[in-house]
Amino acid sequence: MNMNLDHELNLSLTPGVAGRLAKHSLLSEAAPTRQRVVSTYFDTPDQRLRRERVVVGYRKSGSEWLSSVRRCGRPLHRQAKTAEWEAASEPGELDFSHVEDESLRAWLESLRDELQPAFTTSFTRSAWLLEPRDGVRIELSLDRGWIEAAGRRQPICEVELDLVAGGVADLFSTAGKLQTELRLHPEAANMIQRGYQACVDAPRQAVKALPIATDGRMSTISGFRTIALACLRHLQSNEQGVRESDSPEFVHQARVAIRRLRSAIRVWKPLLPADFVADFDPLWQALAARLGDTRNWDVFNSETLPTIIDRFPASPEVARLADYAQRRCAMHRQAARQALSSLDYSRLLLDFPARLLDLPEDTEQRLADFAPRCLQKRAKQVRRLAAEAMDGDAAARHRLRVAYKRLRYALEFFAPLFSGEALRQYHLAASELQEVLGRLNDLSVAVQLIDEALPDDQRGDLCCWLEQQSEALLPELGCMLDAFRQQVAPWKRTASAQLDLSPIATSPSGASPLAV
Image (cartoon, rainbow, N blue to C red; front, side, top):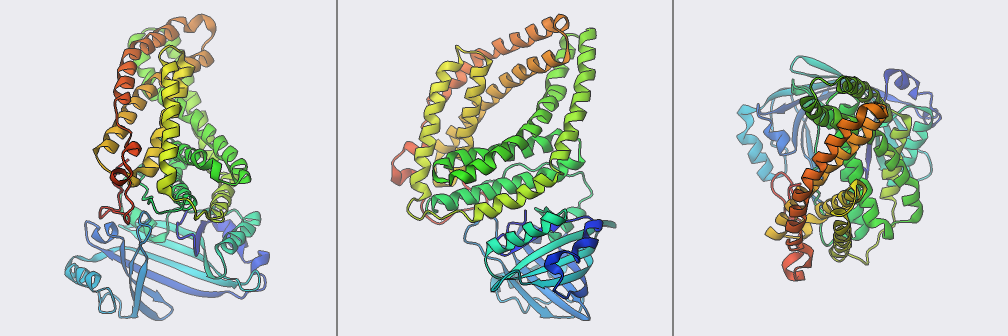
């Protein structure tokens, strides 16, 4: 999802759907304009401009050439703004005299000799100015063409909705009306980001969650909105990998993104409208379940099964189990691909942020006051479940694992509000404990999957051995629990020592104080 949600939406579509766009009722009374747009973007060989979120390009629109420089606001930086400068120019002449930011202009001048073409976009743009109601104007652009980089070509077929006048609700309402008749999918990466991806001749890599720059002065709802949108970016950064790759890590990261989002919904549930939670939490839960089945078989096939084969190398039951696991992996991977290719998923990616951005603002309560209470509540739940887990069964340990995950996610959401070594040590201890609980959970799930795969008379030795492995981990779990109890909860320190209420302090890359 393009995160300039206050004024812009990018949606992909197939060429067949693009051919039907002009016949949609919203466009029937608007006359389109058409132009050929060719743009070349420049960077240094090590892509310094990309890292600093600066875009330098030349664009030919009709017969005119324009030189443009754009400095993009960092998505993690609440106060950052995007600035852009354009001027008529001759192609290939890197002239930065029109850049009003003196430090940026000087930096670009220092790199002039290193700049070279990185990629080119070439497309035909058909544009309509829509006026769905009085006072609302939205420019709809259909772009069809190519991105070319390093001798490779990728197709462009996308719709951009740009809010000229009106509110963000009008933008989403228009997109929703288009989506009722046309298969449109909200996209996370814009054309420039895809151009840079095309420069790299390497397999796509799964994307982990990035730090989220929350701020103690935010209202509670503003904090929730920031976190939820970051979770959507995390999910969408991995969705293409789920659809096109066999790498288990894409499914894993997509599932983590949804778990983090659902954890945020749980944290803020007392402050959210009941219908918002009731409408969306079940949808995210259902999607997580479909990915969860895939993840369970991935872990079993890649991590647990090899240890079983080593222990029972000549077992015919293990051979049958391996064959069954491979088939189940393929079946569930296809189900995950279908889930992230479905119309329901595309609609959810429009409906959820639309309602998210429309949540009523709560200006009375700051995040700095809200965070400690939330963390203390989750820590208390963890302590209660920890006492049950050591003497309980696999289900009790699973409940503890879920509670620890929710505590860790909440700690990561609020990390920029706290400072000091206590925060890092607490997070590290929680992560290490969660790792042990994860290994125990994998063994428990493996027993369930073997129960599914083999008849009663063929699984006894395998399940018994797996249960022995679980028992052997319990002393380590006990030590980890003891170590975690010794940690100082960072939110319990004095308010002046713990809460960072200054403007967000980030590194040059936009990272928050706790790298997660």
